[in-house]
Length: 261
Ligand code: 8X3
Image: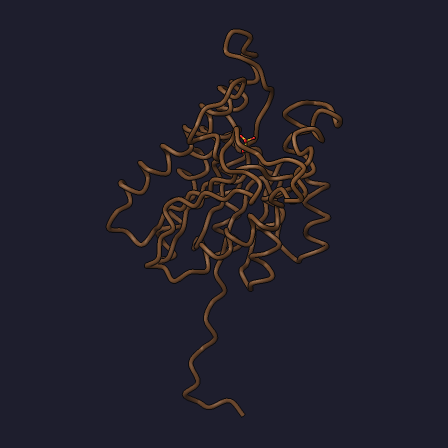
């Protein structure tokens, strides 16, 4: 029998995950749902989201982070679904398009990288900040990359976009100091997902070569585990910046291949 003095069950924590149709976004949405969070998983590809919803029970919404009307609809859905109280936003939407030197830069691809990674993060943050504030326990988690930390040949467009996200994280942390909202940056190195290198390089053979001789690149699940740790940690613990690399990788340029790692 329940005691009349029993404390009410705590309200589940709420999260919005962008880029949830595949890779690290999908794995993070699924992991938070398994941890008991109420998750609104968003991405452009609604067919993929429907599969995720069927597998995990998360709520979904088709959202393009580069489109203001779409992000306004996201904010309205958060209001409706979570009574306007949001505990975490995970900025996973983004990615790399192309791999060429500055002298041959594909400026359309640069623009797309800026729009999705940088402006997308700012647009979604701006829209959801009132709900993060209203929850009294908020986290803004930005998935950047080791590409934000050190440049590499042919990486400049992506380096610039990811460095932009890093700066958003740092500025936000200063701006929100004194409020119960923490800002967490997760910076993975070599992660093998079904799409990252394929989207970047446009062909499966070139994409597979990136991981040649590396037996255990990071997986989306590895990243989701770290993300879940950061978000489930007590609110006073702020993992400002977590760099994650596979054992085989010491730096962007230093990858041990064919060593069984
Ligand atoms: C992915 C890491 O090395 O391809 O964000 O830039 S890298």
